[in-house]
Amino acid sequence: MELYRFYTNDWCKRNDSKSLSIAAFNNSFDDFNLALFSPKKDECDTCVGYKTSNIDEATYQEHQKKKEEA
Ligand SMILES: [Zn+2]
Image 1 (cartoon, rainbow, N blue to C red):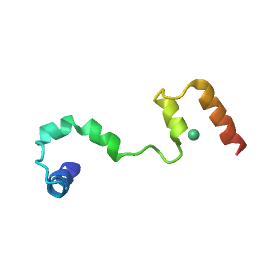
Image 2 (cartoon, rainbow, N blue to C red):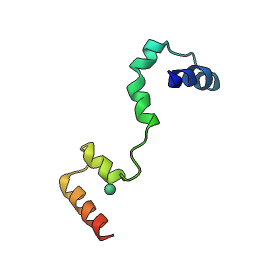
Image 3 (cartoon, helix red, strand yellow):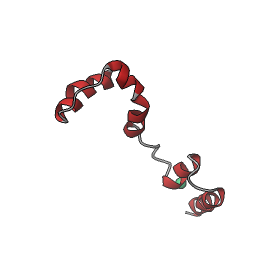
Image 4 (cartoon, rainbow, N blue to C red):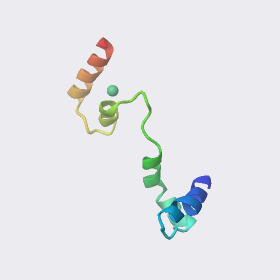
């Protein structure tokens, strides 16, 4: 709810945008969610990429090895 309030009262005004209804907003929430919460700090692009299957096993293992050496 707080996020929706921020969205209607602040974001929409600043962007001169017509606000969505709360229902529509909730439907879009997953997309907003991705933008709002960045990955955990201890996870670099490679680690996140591996979890989302954008990076293959070998690359990830190599990356882990380098991390341990560091
Ligand atoms: Zn990493």
